Image (tube, rainbow, N blue to C red; front, side, top):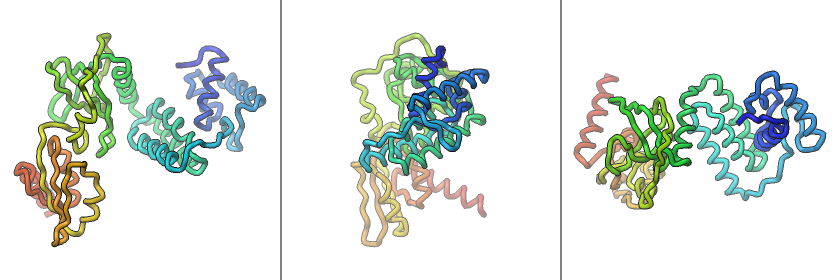
Length: 314
């Protein structure tokens, strides 16, 4: 929200400078103020500097005096890693994501903070070439979930476009592609089975006034327990066979608590796991040259993919 009074403007300035280094021009833009308010922001900064609440750097930017971190090394690395994951996830610029990144990266010790601040600055440069509709969709999805409202949008799947009125149960990042997905029930389809919707495929999203209730019995971790990435479905048992050359690489991948991974006397690795649908497994199997022993339809799919690749390069 754009600050309306001098007091609001100075409080917002302190908030921003507590997480990021900004010039007066940066602050004017970040606060949503018109360009003719630049001189007012400069006067605010002069006052805050005199009060010792803000310091001016040699670069000409301003920041609040750094505070000693209270995180231990493992906590600092966890926060830093979360910030890096958010950076990679947020392909398009979003001012709320930038704010979240700055708040996260204000916490680690100076060494990590400096690197994180450079990444934040690089992210901010995406502003001029970003898709503003994508940022608006993210904001509406967040509001729909947290405010308990129905989200209406057109959904572009690979084969068709459909109208969806979604009661959002959960928001999840796919660990395989770092894309955000909304999990919930489409009122227009009927039934109470939740489905998965990729945020990047939503178009013309709007918030409806109807309340959206999440059932008490819905448990997101149980719902996603069988997913390789984000997609769920009927359980399928998959059996794979990998060459000795990739044994260590296969073992590096979290296969889930119920997976059976054995190194055979020949040096090959045999993997058995149960997933809610096998389609998300395909890139991993192709990437490491795995042989599919079952189910037959997955084996046929992998064989077809190898055949197409062979034909392309022949």
